[in-house]
Length: 439
Image (cartoon, rainbow, N blue to C red; front, side, top):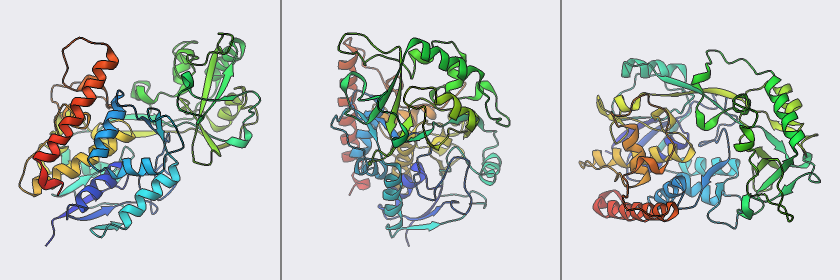
């Protein structure tokens, strides 16, 4: 009889964990409540749906998220393979990995449905959480799961609110006022740039500061995650905050050496370049206010919005007190928590936690206890969220601050290259020493 495990949630982390377990011979019951019951952020029933940006960040090995993706490629990640297969055209391999979100989700869904060891159950999981379970419900976990977890963990969740950016119809963009290209000429033409004069910028900020926001029940200012700050909250921190943040003009020098005062970037949403995402424009303004204020941006005067920005609750647990380095509960090592609910932040990081859980659960069931090396980005994330020395815990992205230091002094780029080389070597060593997981 095959080992059996329950995975709750078919997002990035749950799909990855289920896939890794299934291909190692485990029988997986994968629960997904959509389409029977949806969330405020999801719009489809597809697995691995991207609800905010369609970018999985940089591919460069000197970038922490780029290194994380390369480690995951080496470990045969379903999510990264889906991203590579559905990536939007880009000649620069060090640029951001942006995907066609519909094709990306379709690839993951088909891979899961075609895996004979995975039994998909389209329903909300309401039973008591028992042994041999992976909780990967995401940051928008249902009330039933939240109540189940509170009973299981004996601890309240830590909540914050996340925001997503609007998506615009490409044909409604006035290209006579915009230009294509990435900062410093890198990354091809996947971006449309809307340059702003000084007067246009400050008029836009004034309008943003006086625009009406939609009500979020239970929302408090200090619950907004810094990595996904609504544009109106950024603007309220100072009139020039946006100009030195998502609207910065660096890398857009004209032939005469001058630059626009500020630049709004739009990133392609799909392979046909029919839709564009407003980069850095997560927002919770009322929909009519988004239309009014964002139409002040040069080139977007007649913009057609396929989706307005929204803000929604994100939920995560107090991981340093609750989880070990395998993302399993310290109180019950056969129950795992993966994805953003575990305290990692970001698409790739969530998938990485699911990959880790798949490998760790399989290893334990095979009678071997292994952990991914801390010198790797994937191992460092697991180590960070399970470190009891971390107080005032906040969601964590991949970054070079969480891995063991190379003390030798050298330029930043050179040191990051060394971190990457060391990490990839450690991944190969891990695969060889844990051969039973990869054969």
